[in-house]
Length: 448
Image (cartoon, rainbow, N blue to C red; front, side):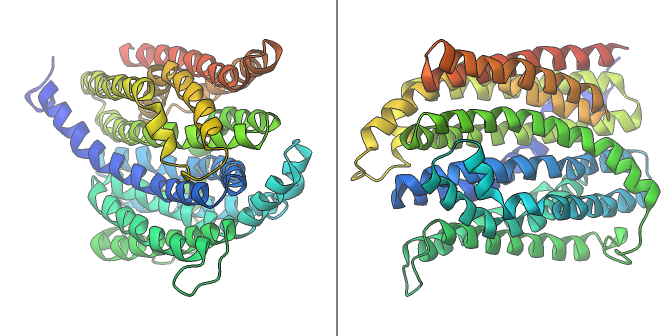
């Protein structure tokens, strides 16, 4: 029986109270990359194509490394619900340790990215520009991962508002720094794509500083940074065991989109630029679902810590209804105003503007197909992480995206000759399989 403290109305308030600031912070965080894409699109098509390629690699590594930070969220939420304050400190610290170790391990990929892109069949000029970008922005991976750890910690404490405000401040800083360094305004040297990379490094470091200061002062009872250098092997092992499947799941999904980026590069620079724009637009919407998924993780983690199955199921239904509503509105936008959305990224005087918009319209129509399934799979992932179920979802994701999604993209795009639209329809196939099987996994567990 549902208790008075667990009515549907109160579930809605709790989900939105957590979800709206988390959505805002994720959208704001993504707005930093979105700003780079818009300004580089106005700078040149080549720079935009290179940034699309480089961002694919950066965010693939970032999301894989974020698995350890994401593991902190349900672990802290469950520890708080079980009144285990010491465990909060232990898992947060070791989440940071695991993130640092991951950063060290993947730096060579950033440093030697240009030959990797060339080996993947990308055009030499685009590969060179993308390599220049990653040489600089690769250094921002460490502060970006530590920001994610602190975001997970503060969100699990139900303090997402501070994360939102600091991220908004970062966006406000990124715009003028980009404007100065990309185009050479206000007396600065014109750096093009390298200027966008420097801006991202500056802004990410500033975000980490702000969150660390807040965490040290406002949550001093947890003493996160005292004796930070001291290892806690048990907690590190727990974070690693929960976090690496999350990272592997992210790798499977981002690998699907990364493969689509590589395949679009085979179609040429203009197709890659259109793909980059469409991917930026769909990713911005996806950040809304990520915020809701984080709220689902926290609420499910709290119910898991209290052993409250009724609350777990009711909260799951509420977050799915909210996510479905967002997805429905997105479908309408992608089908009704695609030219407007894509045109925001293009200089009106750009010679290839019309062909980029034409390609992009088709890609957004294909993206409309997978909005509900994309929302469903990320919500299911959030709920499963809340109950600390990460290994089976990893297997489902790997099979859905790599065994089904990527081959479907290739067959539809090249074998059947549908080009970029076919590649994106293949994404829809992979996401649909993931959504169905992850939902089945969660609801079977929720009924037990």
